[in-house]
Length: 83
Image (cartoon, rainbow, N blue to C red; front, side):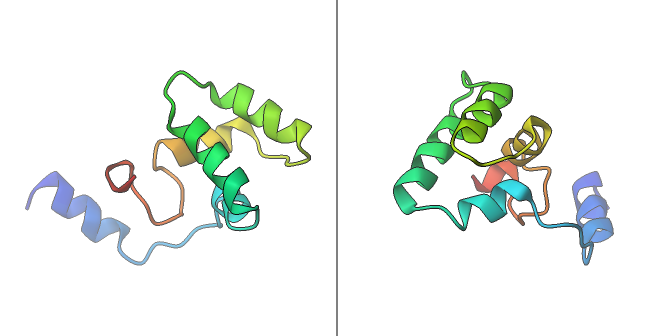
């Protein structure tokens, strides 16, 4: 069994807290969601700066949460390959 197969088997059924970014993206207006998603998809936009801008807009999300989401390491159910 390959490492990928073993990892998928080990991960099956794991649960964790909802991702703050995923929750936020599900609650904002579609145009704002698209704007945030474009910033997160841009490798030249720092997660720290995105977090600061979101905070200016009244949305408090830690930059580490944004980094984890961008890398597909959160519990949103998407991997980096899915994005």
